[in-house]
Image (cartoon, rainbow, N blue to C red; front, top):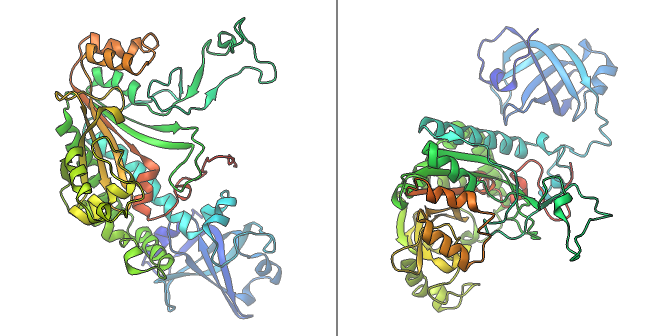
Length: 479
């Protein structure tokens, strides 16, 4: 008999028909007359209740139905008289597909800490919380592709292996086939990368943006969605060594067009989550409130669904970096030295606490900051006429601060080359990037959205390691 997923069974009201379900046992309880088995196959946050009349099954079979075991159940769909579910399956046949030693199984039917679950990340998909996160993550991936496809963008796969650090990110993972125990060196004593696989020094990419620009300057509107890597030795709740980036690049877009797209894109994603992930979001919201119930009211997070609606129902406030600095300099936290990182005026690198103040306290709306100092932004950003700022933009959300960073790109060959020389960037290695400014250059813009940062916002989780299936962090590359 063909299997039906739990999610479909829970929506079915055709009582009396025979069905087959397969999944993993969450719990089994009951007495010598009847057992109630909670079954889950990952398709829903809710378990399906299986009712088994014990005398109809062998004692040996019942003993094998333990938490974690995999079973196939054939039975009759019935309206449930118990609380918590509308339907149940009254079992006529049960087959144990995969046994599970209950004494050794780490996921007992009790609350486990997130830290413990990270240590058993190969099993944490089986918990309610990571089942919910996985389904929401899938929905967000689908929504990203749906949004850009509907707008006529082309998805481009940019290289994971790159020969330059022209992005200016610094700490990159080296890619090499050289024998680490016998590294070839030149007469000058430096590593001879000419003997390496690619004949030069190569690394894992920190961004697909530069290659994305090449495609945009022919295809008009493209986006990348791929893994990126940063060898930053940081163990914070906001850092990963491997993460996913969404980076659209658009020819003929100025900064205003860029901001319009960023606002439309983020609202689309959050609306998609609200429309398609209702049960999982409600579960994640309840989890967050339970976690924070002992905190002071002012320290608690905004309720998850309310927070998502806060973004989609408001127009984003747009102001310049200079205007934001003036607001922060005149704010109570600054005057009372409450900011951990003091604002010193123009040129200050804004931290999450400053961004959150603007969003949550001052404007009470999402914010887009523009026109940052040239000195604190990347070489490829379009230089403003004032000679000291660039046409950059950052989108700021409540509780998380910056969620998108982008800019109009510098289309002038001379200005770009001059900036690269000031920053001592490898002009020869970057000939391909400069060529796009020599041959039919046009105004163009783009931005980057860290997918795991989006997932933190949508899920309400507090640690970025809990919104990616297998986190890669310093001293941790398990599974």
